[in-house]
View (cartoon, rainbow, N blue to C red):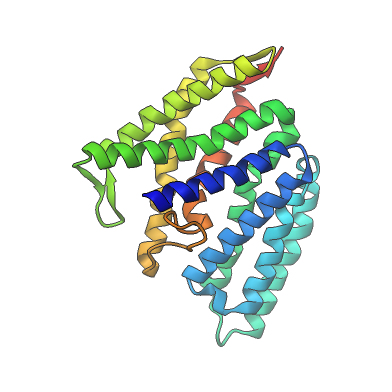
Length: 275
């Protein structure tokens, strides 16, 4: 537990530094690094990393995506993705004796899904500005981490009924409910904090109260999805960069699901504004 807490504190310090530079390219760089590490961990766990040519191209695309401006995304993504598809098939043709089609397909999916999902942080900033963008990003991170933390402590305290004993044996229904409740309370508190700290900042609390449980449940789905991959490939954690927590992907698996969810929702149902 001590190791887990110290790792979490260290991670929060790094996060605070990145968020303090939210309106600079430091954010894009941080997202690029996190995405690269997460993709590397996934490829290593699934043995795709053994094909260095295939994964080398995937790493390059992963690093580039968070730097594609939101305003020019529709113009630049095809420029990156269409040649990428062609290169993957060329590699598949050249190494068809050792590379399977499903490996190329998995490489393509993961090298796009992870950086595009994490790039929601950049889209928040580029679409809504520094203050509201930061608020939405904290909701995305909080929707995953508040839920995970709440579920962990409630589950350890009173959890008895296993949710998915084969996929994730430690998760309980009591923990899941506790995670949803704690996530909702914490996200409402985040809204209050922003209203208190930023003049003219207003929150639609009804929408926020409805969003929080959805984000929490989505977080659980993300966590279980990552656990399923680990079980099928026989690994305990995706990495060990954060002692007590595992790898980058272990810490951001839920964020990968929650961040694009919140991005899509606030595009249609804004939660915050500055008057």
